[in-house]
Image (tube, rainbow, N blue to C red; front, top):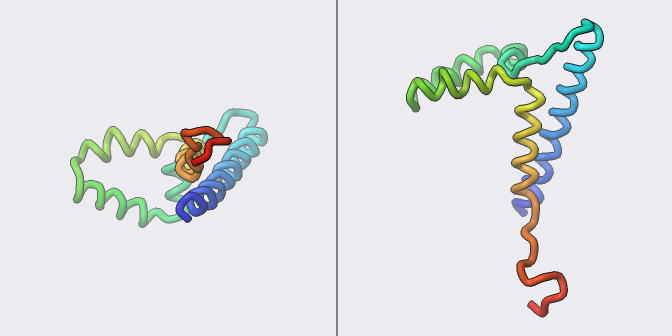
Length: 107
């Protein structure tokens, strides 16, 4: 059950990563220079208030160093890269384990 759920969500996140990559490629072609949209700018474009509330939540429940060096550096990365990595992790969790005894074992 959970393998199927991880695979479906992973494929949707992978599709989102591809769409974001195509948008960055299109912007780069039209501007004749490399343009990479960061996760922070994508998040602000969708909902700036949720980014601010996430900032407050992280500062409330964890050490301030979690926000400043760790999460801010992640937010500077291209959005398609973050979603691609999340999709690969979800698809890896959605993969069924191989039979350790082999394909033709009696077990």
